[in-house]
Length: 184
Image (tube, rainbow, N blue to C red; front, side, top):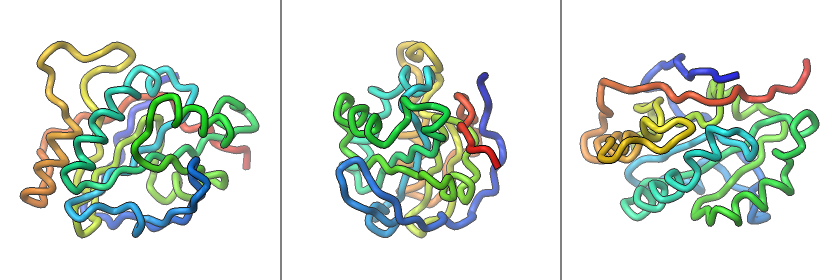
């Protein structure tokens, strides 16, 4: 069932974290934040919405990273109920799609809860001072590519944040599969 990310409180600080990554390293937010801003995106391996955008997301991440904007993906899904989202499968997914950014495993789901993530994909764009400025989508493509000439919403928002400290006022919420929460 599709769910929309719509709860937004701008200018809240990015919660810190310390999580293992598919490259066998452990990262904190400080390790990944860019000098001009940071994108934190919650994804998973099995979601059809993620699968539909993953190659565009990787391409846009490369662009943003080359412009001094940090980028990190986090999987918080319960792997017991969704084995395709296991840490081992995350490693395969990251490699298959050539992730240029760390792919972190939030086994306790504490980081997803701290950020208020609700779906996959769920994009959070932060300014250089780590204040939330963007809570939107990658682009208007959902399970199919966007129309030719459609805006690259995440890229354009993060470029505006890097330049002015502000994101566009019009932000379209992300839509995707709900995060698969653990019982209790």
